[in-house]
Every structure is written in structure tokens, then in C-alpha cells.
Length: 99
Image 1 (cartoon, one colour):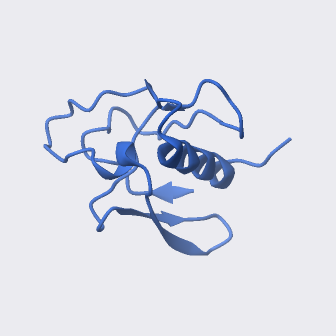
Image 2 (cartoon, one colour):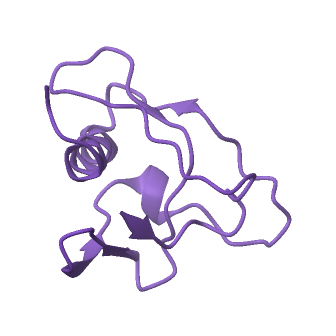
């Protein structure tokens, strides 16, 4: 999977995702995907397809781009933010294969 990473989230050559499942009590955003395509992010997959995913949750949509690298990483998603939780669940579902 290749994706646009949020410019202030880039801290190394990889993009980390905490695998999350429905009902997981510890939902976290490790590295932030980009949101500067009108609140969306571009993804390209190993099977050759690509897609633009529009973020629903405020944690993904509202992370400002400042080009300072000061975006906090590995942050918990509040249980009350169901839209951001769904975004993390979607990200987990497309970046790995369930076992």
C-alpha cells in the first residue's frame, strides 16, 4: 500500500498503523494520512488499483498542515469520536490481511 502521509506526520520512511478491530478499546492513530485533498487521501494498492478515501472523523479531517513536523503521533481516539474510530477501522482493514 502506498499513500499520501500528512506532511507533519512524516518521521521516518514508513507509515505505521495500529491494527484495530470493531470493539477494540484502544483505538490509536500512529501516523496520520494526508487530508489535503478536500479531506481525503490517495491510496494505491499492490493489486494495481487506487482509490481516494474521504475521511469522516474530525481527527483525520482537521489535522492542519503547518510543515513543522509537530503533529502528535500515536494518539488515542476518544471513544465518543465514532467517525474517527470508523476511519481507523477502515485504514486497518485495507493495510493488512486478517488472520
